[in-house]
Every structure is written in C-alpha cells, then in structure tokens.
Image (cartoon, rainbow, N blue to C red; front, side):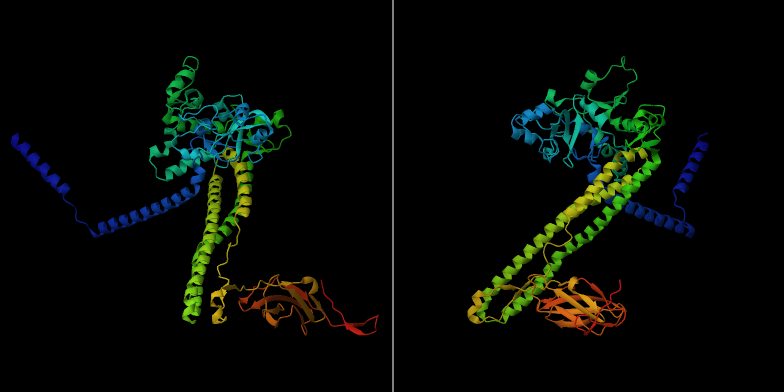
Length: 618
C-alpha cells in the first residue's frame, strides 16, 4: 500500500544518512591512519629515489641506447662489426653503392683518384662526395640517403663505401665511430642486412627496460616503431623518402607500406602461412620470434644451442659439433663460455674503471683550479698594489699597466685550464657511458645474446683504455701559481723600464747514484741541479730507518757531501732539495746506501800504507 511504500522510502533515507555520516575517529583509528600516511610517504620517497637513480643511469647510457643515425631509441638493433648498433630500419635506408659507381664519382682512372678511393684512414674505403640536386631528392650519385630529411645535421654521418680490393663489396660508415661496414654486394639489400648483421637482442632488452623505467608513455616507448619505415621502398626509383610502414610480416620479418605489400609480398595463395600484422605490433612480434629463434639451431631446428665453439666463436648444437666444420675445434658448454667472456670483460672493465677514477679525481682538480688561480691572482694583486702605493705619484700609470698584464695572465691560465677540463670531461663522459653500458650488459642472462656482443664490448673497452691514456694528460697545462715578482729597487729615473721578472722555484735536484757510495761508516752523496736551475743552496737529509725520520745533515752551495761517524751495518736513505729566494724545490728521489758490517783495515800492497775499505752487503 502507499503508506507502507512511504515508510520503506523513509527508512532508506535514514539508512543513507547514517552511511554518509562520518564515523568518530578513535585513537586506534588515528594511529592507523597516521601510520598509513607515514608508510605511504616512505614508499613515495623510496620510489622517487629509485626513479632518480634510474634517470641518472639513463643519462649515462643515453649515447649507447640511442641510434647514431635517427637519435631515437634503438628499434630492432643490428650489431655492426665495430661494436655499435643501428636500428634495422636505419640500416635498410642507407643507400649502398657498388664499387664502379664509387669509382665514377671520384673521377676514376688516374692514380690520384685511386689513392682517394683507399684513403679513408688506410681502411681501403672511401667516402664519395654528395652531389644532391636542387630538388632535394636522392639519386644513385649521392653518397647517402638521409632517413629523416628534417634532421639536416645528419648529412655528414653516413656515406656509401666500397673496397677497391673487393669490387663486389659494398657498405656504409658507422655514424658513431666512422668505421666502414663492408657487406658482400650482388644480393638484396634488406636480405643482406638481415642475414649478415646479427640482431642485438641483449641491447634491445636493455632499451626496453630503461625506456619503461624512464616513465615514458606507451606511445613514447614505441616511438621508433611508429616511425618505422618501409624496408622495400627504393629512393632511387621514387626520388622520395621511404613511406611509413603499415604492415609487418612475421615470417618475412620485414615492414611494408601498403603499396610494397601489394607489389612484393607473396599472396595468401602462394604463402598461406605468412601473417601480415599492423606495423604497431611489429616490435613485439619480431622480438618474441627472435628470442625463440636465438636458442634454436638454424640448421637443426629440433636441437637447442647448448655449446660454444671457441674457434668459430659461435654457439653450436650437438649435431653441429659433430660436423666436419667444427672438427678438431674446442667445444665448451655455453654457460662456461659465457662465464669466461664475462670474466674477461669484467677484468678489463676493472682496469678501465681505475683509469676513470683517476681521471675523475683529476677532473675535479681541474674544475677547482680556476678558483685557486683566482685566489692566487688576488693575493698577487694585493702585493703588487701595495708595492706601487709605496712609490711616488709617477708610478701610478705604470701600476695600471702591470695589473692589466697580470689580469691577462689570469685569463690565459683560466682559459687553458677550462679547455683542458672540458676535454677531460668529454673523455670521461664517453668512458663512463661505456662503463655503465658494459656493466648493464654483464647482467644479460641470455648466454648467446651476451656472447654475440662480448667480443665487441671487450674490444671497445680495450680501445677506450688506450685512448684514455693518450687523450688525458694527468697534469695541468699551466701552474696555479704566478711565477712573477715585482722589482721595486730600480731608481726613479728607471720607472718607465719597470717590468715583471720571472723568479721560479728551483726544480728538484738529481742524485747521481754512480758517484754516491758508502765506505766503512762514511756515506758520500753526490747530486746535480737540473739544467737552468737557479738554486742558491741545497739541503741534504738522511734517515737511518729506525723511526726517527729524516734529519738534516748538510746545508750549503756544494753538490757533494761526505757524512762521517754513522752506524755500522745500517741502510741509510738520502734525499736533497734546492733553495732560492723564491722558495724551495721538492725532494729528490731517494738513494739507499749501506754502511759496512764492521770496521777493518788492510795494508796496501802498493805503498805499504793503511787505508779503510768498505764492505757493502748485498
């Protein structure tokens, strides 16, 4: 009935009000809420710390995880012989020229042109000159077809190369290190890249890992595949850049635009098992297929790659190991080979890491050098200003001239130090990036994938260490001190001839070991000053090794000293330093001299006189 219905409605309203009414917060609830908020803040702080650490690692690895051509995340990276990687689409877009076209571009025929063909860093390859037409389209005579026309700064990165010794070999230059990548000619370009350049699965996983950790959106993560270009579009025929890919074939492992798919891809009748999917799914499909295929032998599909041939430097299955091709080769388990390769790379990275640590400390010193130079300059300026203030008014103009010279010297020193610091920082950045990249690659769990890149990583680490030694000089180019003094002694008539006079601290003298010796309980030390040294006197110090430290034995202008009355059977260490009015030098290198074990004498057979002889124990 209506009254009963109204009563039910009122009850519902009361229940709804009770549900909306906030419950009284008890002490236990308040503690529980406070603990939850605190744990939430701790979790957020921990997440933020991990994010900051990931972003720091990301910045260090950025040069290793991005394509050297398109400057985007590596997509389906192919491993080049030099150890760098490029996107598969970028490799496919490079125009490969045969040797005869390269010869025609260079003028071919005379000896000078032949020399230019083989002049690229004595590598047997050449970089032909680009002659792009005004329309902006590429033609067979251009040195390289650019993947993205809007990136004009990439015009110098790529070049078609050819080997004079092997006319059928074509290739390109690695955009990162400019080393030639030679491929056999006469075959399909996309097939050549797919068959001759291995897929760098370890790097591909690493790119995906760090792209996700950088909190990019899903569209940003797969930006390279959204920009994936058709691998069959020929710029020489169309005069335009390759069209964006719309389809990907899981069996062909190639990207097609709609036009090339209709023109070149097998029909469903002739190839019923070929599965065309949207290009946006290509990355996942090809990566999954490559991961499954990497652990299966390509010749014996039913066998798994569980061993490694040390001679051929590649994984093999049990059936491959029994073939003639691997006869007599040393075959080891895949895990053992992977562990050995990781160990070898770790040892090399340890050595490179020590060099990087020393370079980092030196870099910090260089960065702080301008402040020390500035402080020394200010101190010197005060001294010079005080000296000029004590002179008559006629010296005021001269004071400004000399302070200006000092300021110029400061700018010169600062400029040299900053240039050296910038160079050191550049080398350290590349070294740190390679170190971090190799460390991350050591975490690779797929032995086959790691072994694929281990040799190139080792070669890059060895090369980086040798380059590190040559590129970084662990000494500042200029001194932090100002080796100048102001002479205030000249008379007033010589004011206009006043100038700075150099007054250097003398360098450390050199002890002449051949002329230094111990005889009985007497030690003779002989030293020589460095050429051009302005030393006024020297200090000789000796230490008997009994914990008392060095004690001064001589101070004077002589360069030889004989110290008598020493302990027998004792090894003494001697060192010398030079002095002048500018200061004192560093100590020379130590020389160790042992006195005789006991005192003795003998008669000389020549003149029948007594003489002391020395006894030096080995």
